Length: 468
Ligand SMILES: [Ca+2]
Ligand SMILES: [Ca+2]
Image 1 (tube, rainbow, N blue to C red):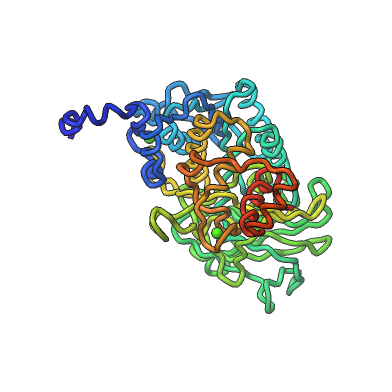
Image 2: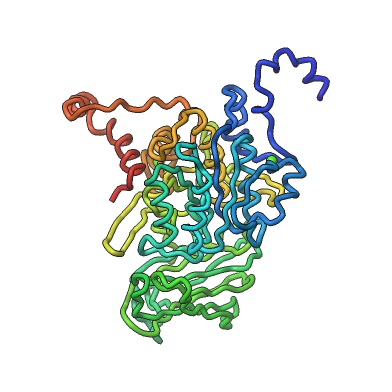
């Protein structure tokens, strides 16, 4: 094979070899499926001059990935390497897609650590230097009825002109939300007197179930708890109020594999509130616990920093489910919008923003799945885009990516797939809409009608502060 390439060296020499190469022992499939390798070859883009900050749980043994060529040796670890290897896979994907981008790792064990993690990245980034941040959240411990610490920090960074990319989350099929209805024994009535919900696990995984209720942080006056049972109906776990994350009430019931776990929500004291439950597999390469259909509520499952209006929120597409030429269906577990904030005021926001493929090969997981993986894919692409445009403003990069996305699902923006599938080539070719005065806008409105203006202005509204 090498000799065959040598015979074609005169032809290949016109391409910039350093920009074409895939990095390391394994390469993320998105490099081909999202045409990133081809675009690097055509344009010479490689992420040069762009910094990518990655906030996650840990990058402990990243030296192994350096040895295999899957991470750059000049990766900068800010503060600490953390306590796990979880973030290595995401860094590898970005390195595959944007091999010359400078990678920075900043540790955040919980959402409480996110503000400092963002600050550490910003502290080593020069003014005007292109910076993209991938924020990988520990979403089982975040606020959902208000913008709490991580959402506030991410929004602040976005407002300062940094492109912050956040996973939409993977509990779209295991999410329930509804107003508490008193049933037998103060258990929540899911409807028709049914007080117990059942969850299916597609594969063996330790499950973490989280219950919230709608009270503002530091003003919790009601108490609820989560009761979890195994398939035989034996109580296996009680989720108690988690004071460390006192946003909206947080009860965790975490236990090992039970094939068909069942749940009850009990009100112990206080007011009837809106309750919200979701479950995730604690093994990060396993996705997809699923509530039985009558309790499943996909809408409103985007939470935490992913709900911040200025960030780019990314959902996951399934490479085994094409719906057209290089176009794919969303995974059933990818979270849906809209975001509904209760405090201090009621606010609705359209999320997610953008979709990309998960199912990426790394040295850690084969394949790595979930919306965090899709967010890493978009982060690698965004590094190439930032190099191409030289733009460091969130609004410009976000508008380029959302305005040029390929529509999926229901026509136009929808709450499952946002603006659609990321299209790097179109984002690179994007010509910004010229700024018109009021008279110009009226004229355009008369000529092309509201429909043509609608999509672009919706994208811009989302990019600059969210639709409320
Ligand atoms: Ca690699
Ligand atoms: Ca659509």
